[in-house]
View 1 (cartoon, rainbow, N blue to C red):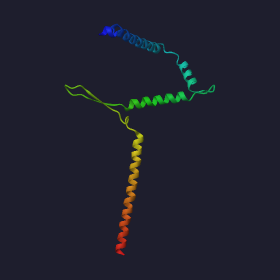
View 2 (cartoon, one colour):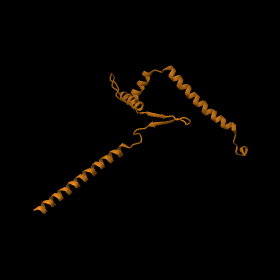
View 3 (cartoon, rainbow, N blue to C red):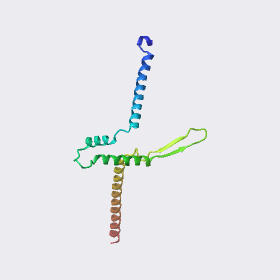
View 4 (cartoon, rainbow, N blue to C red):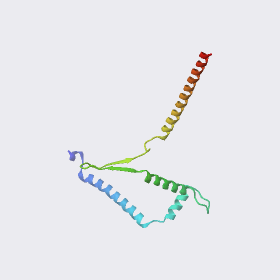
Length: 143
């Protein structure tokens, strides 16, 4: 059946080795790039020219902003991870990672809080009208 369909094990392995060879070359190129430590000034100059035009003698603004953003993002990512590992004898360990408000939509929460405050205000106004009506009825009965 494989012969009729033209399926060959050799073709499967050849394509698999091509992908493996490509990934190995990529890894080697990355290692070589890291070891040689290419000129960072050239990279900064390219980034400056790419992001914004600068007047001669002035510093670019965007790369500094990007650097600060990356630093703050790295800080929040490192601070926010809380992991709890539970180990029981005879069972594999369970790892609980606190995700915080990663899956919470803040817009929806703000809208809910705003709506709740509005409903509380309406209830308070209704309650006040009710008390005023009772007080007016007491005054009318006693008069």
